[in-house]
Length: 95
Image (tube, rainbow, N blue to C red):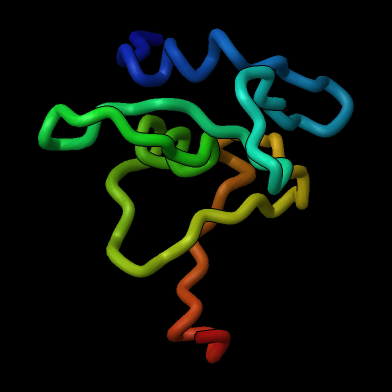
């Protein structure tokens, strides 16, 4: 399996938990309890991004505007793309 640079970078900070299948983030953690890291945006500027958002983009694809990425396993540190799903607050009526 050929991994992209973004995928490799994320996996360096992840520990795979064999009990629940979570890839638990071991890098910086925000006060909210979610993982985060610095990434370069499409303009080349550094910015903070949630680890689950970075994982979704690296392993699945671009994020549509206005959606959130949430973990189906309810583990805030999980970045396993199989545990990530999009959540649209407008469509769900939570806006």
